[in-house]
Amino acid sequence: MLIDSHCHLDRIDLTPYGGEFATFVAQTLASGVEHMLCVCVNLEAYPAMRELVADYPQISLSVGVHPCEQDGPELTEALLVEWVQHPKNVAIGETGLDYYHTKEHKTQQQERFRCHIQAARAAQKPLIVHTRQAPADTIRLLQEEHAAEVGGVLHCFSESWEIACQAIELGFYISFSGVVTFKNAQRLREVAAKVPLDRILIETDSPYLAPVPRRGKPNEPRYVIKVAETLADVRQIPLEDVIQTTGTNYQRLFGPIPFA
Image (cartoon, rainbow, N blue to C red):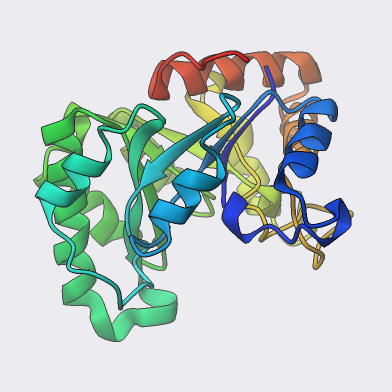
């Protein structure tokens, strides 16, 4: 089952689809993608995002605040726990730490990351974690807040083998995006070759980070197949093994997906 485990469908340019989200979804499903997880990055956009995907059982949701988002309504554990109860919500996030873009807000980021982890534990939902130039603090906070109780995924992974191992020890999955296809990502491909296949997810992070040969262009969930193809190549296994196992992994983490 080909699943895009992390995308931002409310940010997709629908111009090629006549401005129609329904047309976009239909063509995405026709391409072979069977399910998508539409990931929240700020609470202000969440209600409209939930409304956008309401009629599509092929799309699940998360709720959370990206570490680079500094504005918006006050974030509380109670609010996250309340909103994640919606039946389409399968996770808390995207949350985490990003010292590349907003390192001057480290303390605030860490406090909000702790809030997300606490909410995930209270709601018994897995976490979707963003980490950029903050691997040590990310692992430390996951450990201190006992995130292993709910598990989750380090999405768009670009860190070292050591960090991957520490995340896996906490019960987390490692998700690879189009970055793994980039020519300068040999070190990441070496990590992808070593992560146990039953701990891997694949994603696009659409509309960002389009894989080769579309690098630099808008990304879409249908290009998740390029990530799967790269993993099959570096691991020297059949493409179908990657597709089927990552689909099984997704459902092990986020729960069985509904069918239309």
